[in-house]
Amino acid sequence: MILRMAKLSVLIFVFFSCKKDKLEGDKEILIGTWEWYKTEKIYSLCNPPSIESQLTPSSEQTSFSITVYKNGKVTYIEAGQEIATYRIIFTSFDKPNVCSLQGYKYFNINLDNNVNNVLQGCVSEDSLVVIRNFPYPDPEDACENYTSYFVKQ
Image 1 (cartoon, one colour):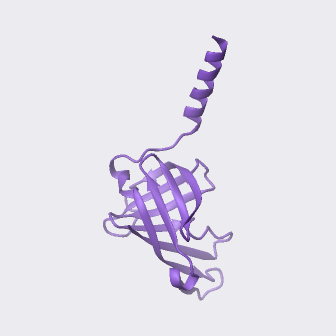
Image 2 (image 1 turned 30 degrees about the vertical axis):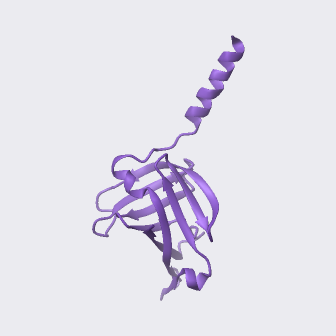
């Protein structure tokens, strides 16, 4: 009897400790595989004039994609290889007046419920714009900025 109770307690703990948000309703727009096609990099923001460059699969000689699953997980892929999988915890979704792009919904996600590991951007039916974290990590200072563009496969 005690052994059964211990097993049940462990199962309950595991079930609740693996918190993630299922993608339901409007959030289902994120489900699918998103293929990276460019990143706009702005740097020297701290020492104007700023400089802009464009990174592409061709210029970087690699590819990136993001797969988002209905069960609340996201996988990052580089050159066809999975490099990380995280649980999705939404902190914001479709907040008014955040995405200036017509027809897009804003999202802010804490990956694995970690406030220091954020996926943030805007999404439409066929396009994903990532402004934080992937494929290029947030810069250590505020002197650089990356905006990455993906298309739904």
